[in-house]
Amino acid sequence: MQDLPVILEQYKLTIVEPAAPKTRRDDKTGQDVVVTDRQGATMFVVSLFAKLQVRAGERAPKGEEIRVTLETDPGEGFAEDARVKLINPRINAYQIENKDNGRVTSGIAFKAAGLTPAGAQAPAPAPVPSPKGEK
Image (cartoon, rainbow, N blue to C red; front, side, top):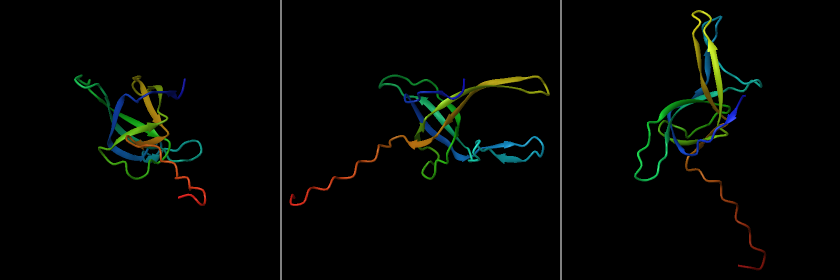
């Protein structure tokens, strides 16, 4: 299964490394190359610290740093220490075998459509003009 939706509403997400284009090392040249999706759009990666939100008087368990692949450029305003929410967060399980030594690495990868500020509200609707003749 791919792109399993994940609910992170109960976590505080804080940026520890701002978003940057995602890169990988080219096996042939050894150079870092920018990762793109199937349509050629640049992917981004952001490092977040995820910590469970608890009720008053409870002690929060230890948090964890996660790296999240973003499908879009989050734009300006997402600096280090900013609290954020992920748009359409998903996880994917992976397993990679190193052909040189036979070691197997497995885990989960986080992916999201983008970022939004944690305290962001939906924009207020535009005021409706009053009919003519009324004040």
